Image 1 (cartoon, rainbow, N blue to C red):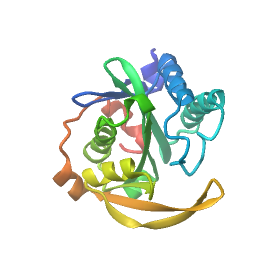
Image 2: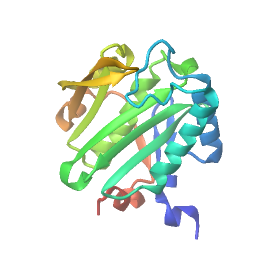
Image 3: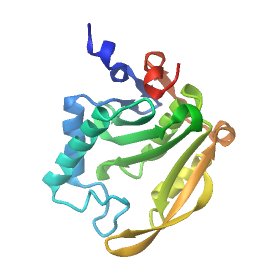
Image 4: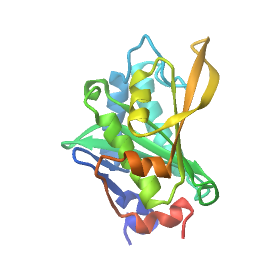
Length: 215
C-alpha cells in the first residue's frame, strides 16, 4: 500500500509550458508558507474578502498551513477544495485552487489563487488559472466556472477577461471596515473552448474521479 492507494489526489499533476501544479507535500507547504510570510500583495490594499493577509508574517505562514490541512481533512466528494502549489523551475511560486459543491449536479466550479510578490507580473496567473480550468472543463466535465475580484484588483480581472469570463453581477462587501464592490465573473464551457490558448496536460486524474463525486 502507498499513499496513492488512500489519497490518489497526491498523484494529480497539471503541467503547462512553464508550470507544474500539484498537491503540496510538506516541503512544498513550507515554501508556500514562507511566500505568504514575505507578502502576496501591496499592504495598502486588501484583495481578499477573508483578510488573512492582514496579520503578522508568522501568522500568515501558519494560516496557510492550517488552511491546506483543513481542506484536506474536510474533503468530501459533495464539497471539495483542491488547492495546488504552483511550481516554476523547481520553485514554489504560489497556489491555485478550484472548488465545488454538489459538482455532479451543478457542474460549476470556483477558483482562487495568489502568487508571491516576486513572481507577479509575468503572466503566471493566467497560465495557472488556465491549468485548473482545463481540469474542470476537459477533465471533470464542468459547464461553468466562476470567479470574483474587487474593482481595484486589475490583475485578477485582467486574467479573467483574457480567459473569456463575462460579468455576472456584483456583490457589496466590507473590507477593512469600508464598503467594497466585488465583481462576479462567469465562464461557460463554450467560451472556455473558444478562448483556451494555454496547452495543459493532466496526469493521475482517472484515479481521482470518485473524489470529485464522479464515477
